[in-house]
Amino acid sequence: MSEQTDPANPPVKVPRRRMPRLPGQVVNCGWCGKFVAVPLRGRVPKWCSAACRHRAWEQRRAAASGLAAVQVVEQLVERPVRVEVLVPAPPPPPQAPQPVALPKKANEWAGHLDQLAMVLDSGLIYRRDLPTLEPSLQRLIEAYNRRTRPRY
Image 1 (tube, helix red, strand yellow):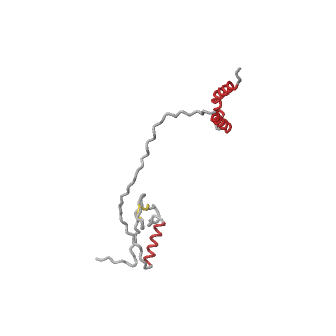
Image 2 (cartoon, one colour):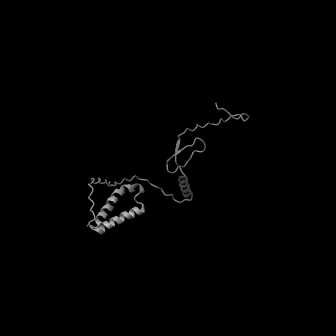
Image 3 (cartoon, one colour):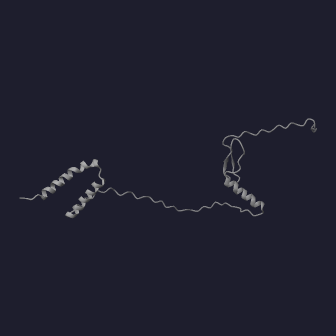
């Protein structure tokens, strides 16, 4: 038996309810295949980015104009690569401090004393450190005075 529809009483179409979207649902990009997150509301995205959308549009346009689209064939090519790893050399063992060669001539001592005066004038030695130098400078002045005093 076939059911006939009554024109006076058309069948009521019940709208199909879509399944609600769940957080974390994803679709694949229509161009590159990357996963694209589906928002809870609104349109389901087709592309992962504007660049993929544009490339797909260019492909469709080339196909519509009759031009042959370039077909990209991907192949996995493995090539061994030699990598050299440089290991830093261990630091040399600490050495005993080398004795400082003292000046032997008066003009060499004068150069060192001039350097000390220049460092003091330039402020490279802080004022708080001057008391440390004072006893040594006092002994230097006393030794100089003893040496320059005439002997009778």
